[in-house]
Image (cartoon, rainbow, N blue to C red; front, top):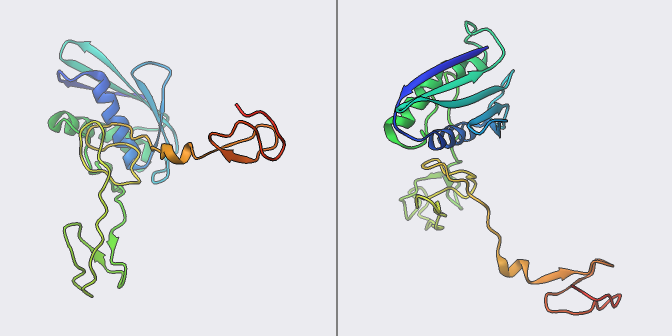
Length: 209
């Protein structure tokens, strides 16, 4: 089955597609690229189960008008099925994106909430803390404040566990310490770990690349 929504907007389709992908990823669904350029598929994820996948596609009907189409299996009248809850409320999500120009951080799906990062706890008494506090109000323990990473695209502060920026949709690539990567290399013959500047393996004498 298919349901379509038409929106009068001048935003670009790539922005809307990326914003929707980010929203559904943050909601707890798996998002995979579709066979067409402006298409993606939703399936069960870590926080949300879908009985049937949903294919979301977008097309420009005319200048200033975008159609969002959702292909799925199921009865549109059975709103108890999670698949149809998304289908029936996608228009609210898109309208919020178009109104604010960013990815919503609230859920528009009845019965579901947007997963939130766990609260920060005091290291001593384990009571919940607020980000702006410098001392724990329960036991007086100083609060260690670690600087949060920022989105490389919009500059907003991110949680370390986030994979996608909820403000602009930028995919956050986990970076490794290049010094650690270069600290050692393995011998391709015997697997012995050698210094990065070694020419020969100290165990088997193999010439290292």
